[in-house]
Every structure is written in structure tokens, then in C-alpha cells.
Image 1: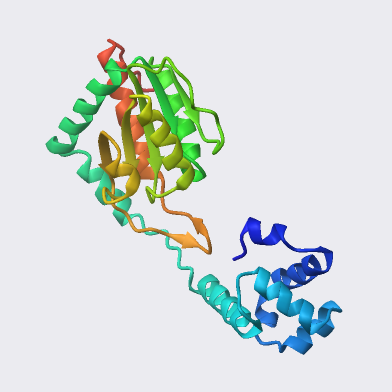
Image 2: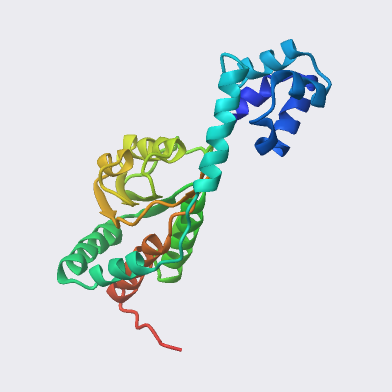
Length: 247
């Protein structure tokens, strides 16, 4: 609800107000300013200064923000319905999807270097994808750190495989544009093709499943992205003459 930049501006007394508000959101949204001041042993002017630092014009707007935050928490709706994932997996068995994977495998095989990119949950998938490709015979590295230095040379004939559910992660977009500026090809795997990362990519696969969030956290299923990475890895292995054993 509050940004890191806002919290950094707080003094010690305001931090105590912040601690109380975070621990008692359902209580604070109904409290008058004097009641909150008594609870945290601060003046009403200190409360107002705290509200302004949190991006609110006054205490009334702050309480409204608290109510909206509580409402969003209560309306978070997470299901374990796997219908969409099953539908996606069925779609990947079509000739059209198979041909697209074969075309992307051609692109991957021609690349001298492979970099997997993602942040948050997508960063975990990127790490998994890099390990999977390396196991299949195509050595790959992953980047899941927002500030990892990528202003490097000698990236000719490289491919960045980018994972992002929303396709709008600032950190992932930053990494993607840096690789693109160094003439690397970009293959993105996103939830929709109508997003920034998909639009700036040379190739994109979109899987289209329902977004799921808990407060500010994206908990959308990563199974489609992992499935695509696995399918591509297995195709790479077969291209190199390997034979997968079932154990």
C-alpha cells in the first residue's frame, strides 16, 4: 500500500504511526484522527504530516485509502480451477502450435549464447528454463536480479528468452531493451501479446490465462510458461541427436 520511497521519508515518530497502521488496518479505517493520535501518542498535526508523506491530502483521504486496501484484500479470489491450464496444454498439441515451436527451436539452435530473463515468480521460471536447456545440451544463463549489469559487449548471435506474466515489469523491460540495443534477438513468453515486452520482442508466445492477484502479488499460474520452456528444451535435445529415456 505504501511505497519504499514514501517510507524512507518518515522520521522515528512517523515510523511508529506506520507500524501501528500496518498492524491494525481494519481498526484504523474507522478511527477518528484524535483517536489514532491517542493510540500512537502523537499530535494530530503529526498524523496529518504522516498522511501527506503517504500521498494523501488529509486524514479523510488516508482513511479512504485504508478502506480500499482492506476491500482489495477481502476481494482477492483465488481458485484451484485447472480448466484454463488444461485448455492451454491441449492447444499446444495442435499442428499450428507445434510448427511455431519448431520455428523457435531453429532460432534457439542458431544462437551462440542463451540468456533467460525474469523477475519475481517469472525469475524462478527463468532459472528453471536455463537449467532445463543446459541439461538438454544448450548451455544457458539466467538473470533474475533487477540490477544485474547487462551493459556488456560480445553478445553477437545471442538470444534473450524473457518471461513475464503481465509483460509490463519495469525491471524486465529494462533488461530486455538493453539486450535489444546490443542486437540480441528477443523471444518473450507472456500471458498476452498486447503488452510492452511482447511488442518489443522479435518472437512471442502468449498463453492467455486469468490473472490472479493477492493484494499486490501476482499469483497467476506459471505452468504454461514452464510447459513451453520444457517443450523447447526437449526439441533442442532431439535436434542434437539425443534420445530421451523414460524412467
